[in-house]
Image (cartoon, rainbow, N blue to C red):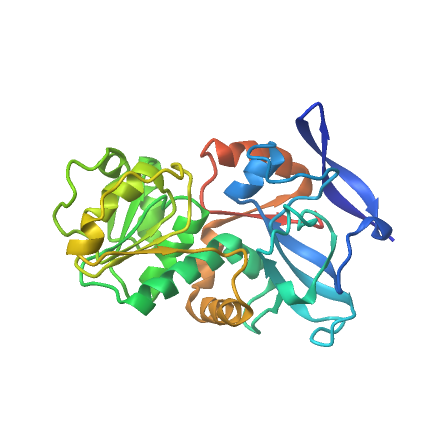
Length: 327
């Protein structure tokens, strides 16, 4: 059996991508074979498609860090032919062939059965970005959210867009920070009550503490932005950090943590335990507004993936981009 896939190759350290015809015998080892329906384009996918950061070590390689689809064959008793499943994390698309292919073979431990209410398209409209957003929101709730608005940074991106929507759906007052003023109406429609220009958070903090401005934060930027917003958190508030687009260096002091009891929560969607993963997908099924989800989603075909990798690194992609693997 053959199938189509985006195949990455490397020559003289230059990575190139093309849509190729592959055979089932080329698939990596795994317990479950899935006919892939949809995947997504995330920031990490952009890096992988352009050979940035050496996230992939072995070529040829099929990228795509998540996918939804239907079980084709299984040696795992938890899954039978016809089950609808979703996969995010576990280094799929990095150390193991990923979702930009019409077929995938993976460990059954990495899969989650889709909730009844979520279609395969909706699952990838949520995707790794939305799953990460839900993990971040759950972490904030576990530690208590203050009375001030909850801030979302990098709000026009994949994680940020879904985070704004989820927090609003859950009844929180949401502030959205973005460096793209043209997305203000879009973010307001998703549920943001105020738009915070990125420049307000982009400068290094002027002191160890500033006025208490935020009751919680989902930070998808990192770097100077994270250092700045730590000084503006309410007493006992938390920052769920899940992105490093602004860099992984953090220049701060212990003062926000000692004098205001601020919590810095790291969110890792890659190796997340099954119980937390399953709970997150169930709550996504409950909270997501299907109409809003559709509005923040753009669907593309496999042939468009290589160019989109460059576009997302350049900050030119808004919301969620879903790959219809069969298109």
